[in-house]
Image (cartoon, rainbow, N blue to C red; front, side, top):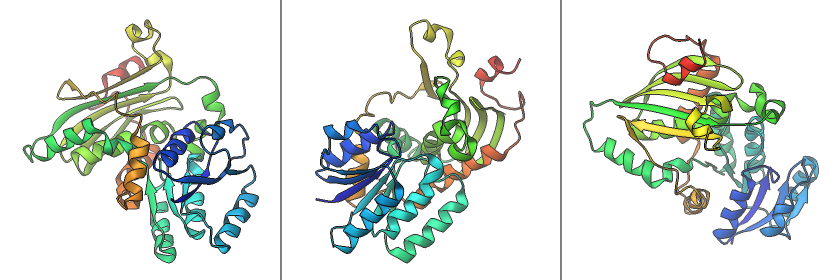
Amino acid sequence: MKRFALIGAAGYIAPRHMTAIRDTGNELVAALDPNDSVGVMDSFFPNADFFTEYERFDRHIDKKRRLGTGVDYVAIVSPNYLHDSHMRFALRSGADAICEKPLVLNPWNIDGLQEIEKDTGNKINTILQLRLHPAIVELRDKVKNGPKNRKYEVDLTYITSRGHWYLQSWKGDPKKSGGIATNIGVHFYDMLHFIFGDLQQNVVHYSSDTKAAGYLEYAQARVRWFLSIDINDVPANVRATGQRTYRSITCEGEEIEFSGGFTDLHTRSYEEILKGNGFGLDDNRVAIETVSTIRDTKPLGLSGDYHPFLKQVIA
């Protein structure tokens, strides 16, 4: 049985990590979050120590390490801009890290973390659960076993409506979240790289606080993408049914259906990590480079091969 600590216990995604820790037969011994709305812990690990102050959490983890009962893993589900610091804390505490996406906000942060891995001998793992989804693996195998010189035409559309709270939280601050493309898109960019190979071109057509769009060309795909948290971007016929989200990924006009099979992907990720097969720092590099470039690129507007939804945004 491995001992886990959790940073970000009050967050939206934290229960998936608690589930994964429990379902892999391990124990959560300590958790941290400045927000004390963590009653969900009672359903998983009611005996875990809990802290709202980082300094006390740090002291507690260090004491356990010195007593020979230190944690084996630190799971990190804190705000994006804190991931780098919290992974450093994990490694220096003698533990491996399991970090939610985005791993970091900038590609040069990966280089620094690799140095700490070398210094400590501990490892950073990340949650790239789409790489484990059966439908994604099947498509990757199809592309890998198909013609090497073929470029597939792909459209990625992801609209996940958020209320007014979003822009008032850390997620609405690009310095903390990395912006829309980073916060809600990074795992899709990793998926595209995983399936279609090396990234060759990165064009941005539009970028705002609530939506972004662009074009990505990979070794075996041309991808038009559109991301949004604005409910007005959800197609009218979908909104009419009461739905506030819309997700569509088409390859050569055929929908890639992967709505199902998500529920246990965090647990599957933990299983692989515990077997030593987790996705590490270099696995994240292309996706992090992708979102960093998107963040720093001047949008072109309605020029070139842009996503059709963009016509609704730019008159």
